[in-house]
Image 1: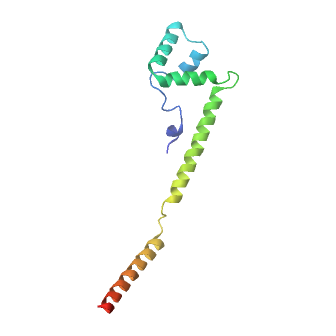
Image 2: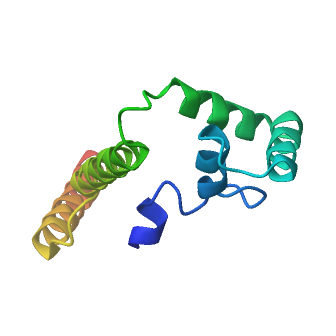
Length: 119
């Protein structure tokens, strides 16, 4: 899986970018741009939730640190999930397939031998 897919901000909303949200929260946008952000907040509940979540973050802490931590946690979770899936899968081991085939053939042979003996 590429790193772009693991980055939580890679698939962000196309209508509004992350920097614009940060500028809105720090009041560094012109009035018209602030109005556009507020309009998109009213139209899209996802943007509204994003702004509310960003407002709850302490202004003393760096938001990029939070984003990096979320990305790291997401990558760890994806790696664990991938590891669990690989454990559940049968490995490409020809000995396993050969053994299962031999056991099945022996069972079939026993069935036919017993069927002939009882008839």
